[in-house]
Image (cartoon, rainbow, N blue to C red; front, side, top):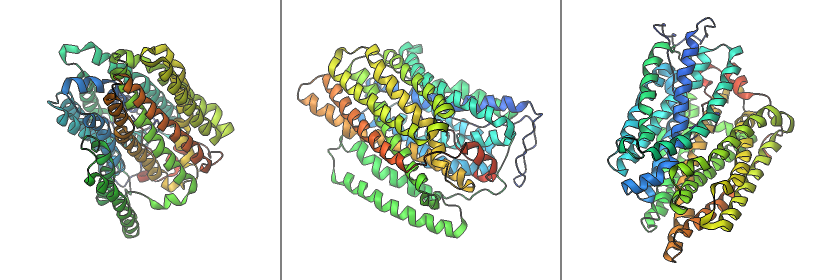
Length: 522
């Protein structure tokens, strides 16, 4: 799933028989070309598909575990594998579009995403499903970065505000639709396929977007694209795997020594990554990670906030659905409907925060969001403990709405707050990094579920707690989330008191084409 500025399924389109823009020529949108609106519809459809795909899976995980006999580690990898692949390749996907053409990469990404969705839907075992989800995340990383780049190359400046507003609406719709659609498709058991339609639904959408995109999206490239940093990608991936893999698999394997060695090695790999990125900067000025950005205090703090916020979301959403379906015994549909008030509250608060509150109160809005969300978490702790296994969906509405309002106050203005003091020539690189660390935090949070949820459930099951063990595991996860949110509140003091205007559009206006890459968050 992915933050509303980057994200969670996107793709890029092209115009019918329109000549490709030469690599050295700047993008000059044609204001009289009506095909750009058809191209926008295709891009937004692909973006919606990706956003929904991030959220649609969670609600079906208990059914997948039951039907396929998946282990708890495999359940975590179905979501974490996607996030990890997406994060590792996101910046590289943007650069490939700049070099070889955004339309070309968009079409390649959406074709690969569709194939991966088919492989997910027809997976013969949990191992194949995990591998297919990793492929799906990698393909999303190819198409998602092209979305706003294509918009930039297709629409003139005076129309982009309207377009970005539409993207915001799509993000909100995706947040509401994903869990509900996943619940319906799982509950309906179409043609006896159980959970598989949550992936197979992508096939007709992806095929249509691929055919129409090839006709109506215009090609564009960056006149001076940054070079690829494949060594940086490998080092980032290895560092994350060395941390995430043992956290995810350690409990099932009895916490072996090699797991702790791997986690320690992630630090060494991180040090090697920093050294290499410094050398890459000196050599050709195209590192995967622009380390100079971290000299900007607000950016460094904002990256920390984004990472930890992603971690919180990874912990909460997975444990929440397991608590409702495995602990309380609810159906996928009941669990999906229960989450609707949360999604609506996020969308409402996000709109109000950007339009009304942030211009007046600045970072205090984000800090209020962190504390509001923490308060909602604590109310949830109380209610789930007070009502126990007999808790009703309507009794969850209050904490979920409070949490949703808090989240909405954070997610919408956070990117602008982080970018507000970043030099405009680095805005694209900074935006890509923001979205990358969000996904990495999400993957790390999902891996921690083994430690803070499944460990508690297993221990309490051994003590004869029965399904009530899931309440205890959920409490553990919520208390972790509340503590992290308080930490986020404190980190936010390093953000600027007031963001300097709309950096997303402003930076896109002034940055060179190869830097115009604020991703759509999934």
